[in-house]
Image 1 (cartoon, rainbow, N blue to C red):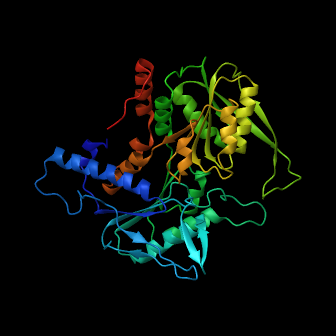
Image 2 (image 1 turned 60 degrees about the vertical axis):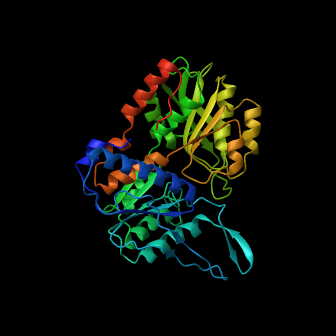
Image 3 (image 1 turned 45 degrees about the vertical axis):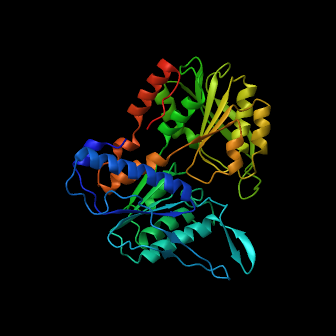
Length: 396
């Protein structure tokens, strides 16, 4: 539920409209949550006068980016967006989308979807009161720093978006949130789905013992330490870390290959362990860490990651599950989830639609989102409930 008391004291800045690019299913779920929030608030306040566009059957504005035969594209917005609070929800990793170039079928790349985001902004023609881009996986976020003669794609993309009219950027678990320094005068919020992860974990596992004797949180590398430390703090358990030893004399696929994973921390023997990271790309690093933990006699291995891309397929995870290396893999629906993923016994999907709807509702009221971004009290409540009943009730 949104903070109704807070929203009652404020007025929306403009009617909400949501444009979906590459994430129609997620956008529709966000829309359903938002419609429900607004109807409940209207009923609670018993308003005689409701602001125009405040409570709607849907906030989604229909838009598309059709292609010419050459592969060039244009954006079309079917409804007026004059004076609205426009939210562009875009999944740049949805490779299931396709288009044709001179009769050949192509899969949409992150570059293609990012270009469509700019097209939609261009089609809005400066008419919206404000534009917020919600890009759960931040475009080019892994190219956030320069080594030698390299481009700084993420910083450039952020500057480009703000230059063409974007007021705020919302993203989930940015690879390096310091990239927001590229747009110091614009809004940038890095959202961590920690509460959603813990809720999904507790719902999927009924016999988890949450204490130092039975559970440990693991960072797969030094870059993941901040998010891992937060998990460790709210759960009240110990932390361990692997660091990657690389061969800096060799470059393979644009990076130095990992030659070993070294572990720092107390013993994991007999404990359930949670590996926390921002993304599973090919999954090789995650499975290497799981293998090292099992070699050290860990009990069950939970792999938790905001983005599950599985770029090399699911076979390696199937094999790891059969061999007992992993117990569960939890990722969000922030990005495209291939249909066969839900058939896997080891997979758990973490839904962030309600979280996004809460953020949109609060921003539209110009209300503070600090309480939403800090989930400590909600996590504590869920942990107490779990320890008492060993189950988590479904929220309405």
